[in-house]
Image 1 (tube, rainbow, N blue to C red):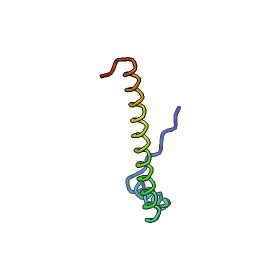
Image 2: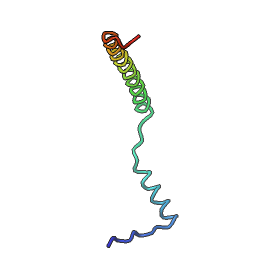
Image 3: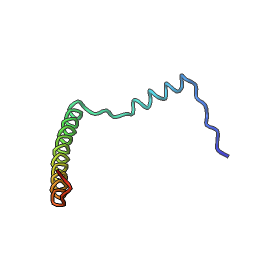
Image 4: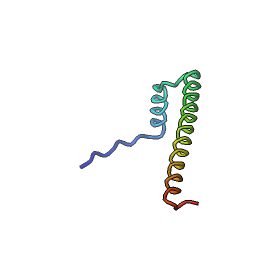
Length: 72
């Protein structure tokens, strides 16, 4: 059988939460800004990549359909 979990009162729970919160390592302001800028740069790069890829694939398909006489 599974062991029953020990119940903790609200005061002890909040004390434990505060203790765990003190163990967290927070990033510096500079690290946050640099990471945010890197994310935006990657989003722009991926947007350009998918735009070019979509344009190329749709152009190839349109050309193929024209060769087959299925396109307008």
